[in-house]
Amino acid sequence: MPKNITRRLFLRDSAVAGAGALLSQRLGELVDRDGSRRTPGEATTPIIVSSHRNETGHRALEAGWEILQAGGSALDAVERATNIIEEDPEDTSVGYGGLPNERGVVQLDASIMDGRTYNAGAVASLENIKHPSSVARLVMERTDHVMLVGPGALEFAKSWGFPEEELLTDQARQYWLRWRERHSDRDDWGPPDHLRERGGADAALPADWLETYGTVNVLAVDGNGDIAGITSTSGLSYKIPGRIGDSPIIGAGLYVDNEVGAAGATGRGEDVIKACSTYHVVMRMRQGRSPQEACEDALRDIAERYRAAGIDFMPGEKFVAINKAGELGCARTGEDDPAQMTVATADGLEIYTGTGLF
Ligand code: GLY
Image (tube, rainbow, N blue to C red):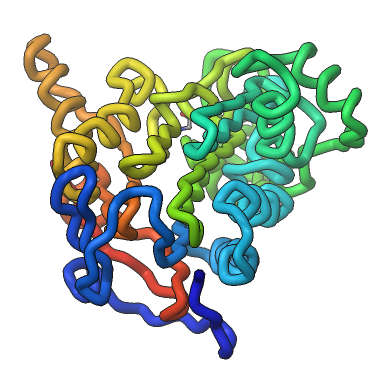
């Protein structure tokens, strides 16, 4: 049974790599925190992690943890946590408040995977629905399909009673307007040419128009040892309408294997799709690599593929992973900027620091 938590979760800004980490030996034998051996499927210590490290991300994990510590499922915990992040109007990378496509329309992608039932669901290019991860869950549980896109996904969401809402916040609109005026000097958006360098209407706009691939991953193991995960995003900001990233693609933005663990990706989705990166991470863990090693392997895999093609290119990516024993990993592009993620367990809320490569 999961341990009870009797105090409010608190944030400890410490690297937990190594300290208290759990050892994964081989499939069929795992060593838990207290050194006891168990086989996959046996009751375990619950844990929930998120690629987000901001205040909302912390609140989200607290809510997910409450479900886990009460004996709830990993699936319910990741959905609850993700919904909180999707609702945050300040978060320009996920759900409500996400940055729009080049026409100013917010198009959301999300996927969910339930290790216990080996089931998955996803939505892509979904407009006007605040909780794409919950729609993805219904695709998973209430259809025989894995992914619905665009108008079909919207019709499906509405049939289940999801209200249509404007997802473009004033803040996101201001970023988009700024981007539209500034991304090219070969069109007619912006002040007249003869006033361009003099401020005018331009001066009222934000200083930065935020070009980003931001995304959230939430992964959990519950007290029964079952594993679930969600990836949710508004995708690449100012994308070509209809562009779909890695987030809704099972094996790219998210993968869960109930015997092994789970992985999620953020960053440039085009490369995560080509490299099937989260499937790569989970398969490496299946072969005995730790989550940390597996995340680094998947980053190196992308680098090596470009190198083999004679191209000097390394996209910005971040992978997070967890195994069935609660061992953690995260790695990102950028040697001077190690990847981090937030972790909630019976010990409280902590920041796990992984590695930065390339
Ligand atoms: N990783 C988010 C995207 O590329 O859409």
